[in-house]
Image (cartoon, rainbow, N blue to C red; front, side, top):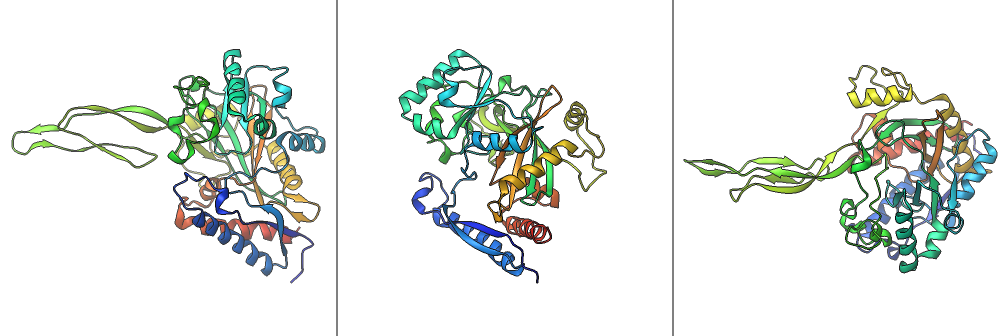
Length: 393
């Protein structure tokens, strides 16, 4: 076995007090899950002659991992990749001096499309500044928030490319992610968050009852569901059996079931699937495509039968992963999720680099459903692929 010159760095385990106290999942279970992943990395690395070392940094309990500042990272990448298109991005202390609209205010320490707000008017900006001043979060906003030029989508839906790349620059898989149609009527609301997510500091910006409510349009391409009011009809009356209750609706996101009732019809809140994913370079070349998929691929100029990742994004994503995932001979991240937004000007803009990307794209690539049973299998496959590429560099 030939030993590789690379060393994989693993962060220290987080402490229970680092977790959100309102999260229904116990910190001990999350720590156990992180330990399991680290064990897989240690064992696979050892088999391939790779040294594993522990860093001085704690593993983030969140899905994202705040490291180098987003603005400093973008500047470093731009110097290394001159043709990389990046939306104008400013820190709070600079943006408040020279604001421009529309702009996306986002907390770089939060993932999954949360804590991102499209600010389109001076009134919204005044409310945001009022929230910063009243919440006492100016230090945190200065350190973790950025204000990024808004890139209008090429269709009537928010669209982005998600590319999973390993630290050696190999594209593992990629897909197009799209959100709800006509986002003018879809807002960022506190009611869309899970119960344990509702106590975040920026909840004031999403609460219609709060003076700082932004009423911001949703622009997250990875937002697959929106809340809608659904009418549940009254139970049908049968003279023999009385009122017959029947299943009237199932929430596609939560699985909650709503039954008819003899007391009359009623309106309930339920999720409606509005977004989705389009695999690129799919294994199943003969799969039927929906009208939505066909329209999106057409707008992007991609082949509708066998859509593939644009060559320019392949090259740039590969370069970004090598620059961010490794520092000299130390591997900081085995793989990354890199996001690009297609613009109406024909450019693909680098948006952000995720150190803890969702495994959904990898699950789709392997033809598996992402759940508790398959997560370990998918992770092990990903670790094997990444370390194999590292060893054979």
